[in-house]
Length: 221
Image (cartoon, rainbow, N blue to C red; front, side, top):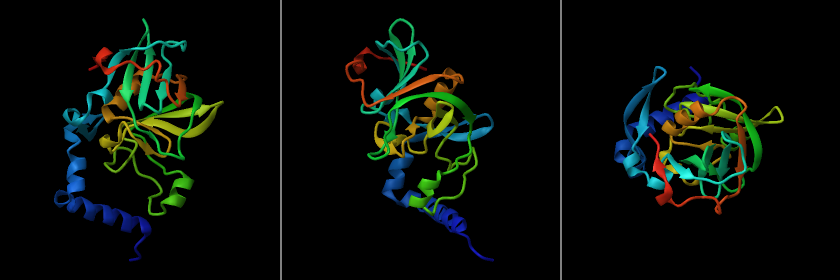
């Protein structure tokens, strides 16, 4: 039988998984998870929020904006995503954003949404990382999109960027992605419910003058 690149990749991942308990880096990553939950028939690892700094946890904050209620605003410098609500408030989520060279800014709309989406690495990503598979099925524990994806379009054209869950809760609050906005899986599920098709999105370098202090925040269950 001829081994393919994908076979070798998956075999390597299996070996890494087998040795994870003996590797401090893997052990540290595993500490970000606590138990499991079932969503739409898929079992996934839940986030260990006891390990998460409270500034990255979902919460209601004071927020002053001229944008309409329901608009999603992303503050990439400070790693926050806001859903604007009534009475000068917003729901704030901690997020991971693009690394240097992968950041993007501007307006878009949520024109497509998926439950447990399949992940297909973009062509340019596969050029940088030819070991990646052609796709990963939705619900796979190796799927980096997690339980939800919201696809951002501009003028009817897919930008290639998404709001989605993550396999790396420790990357929230950091510049870690290839441009997409990462969220805790629980937050991606929550945001999915709040963003109907057509939701307006604005991605900004920063909005520090509008960002509230953590002490002004109220946790959201």
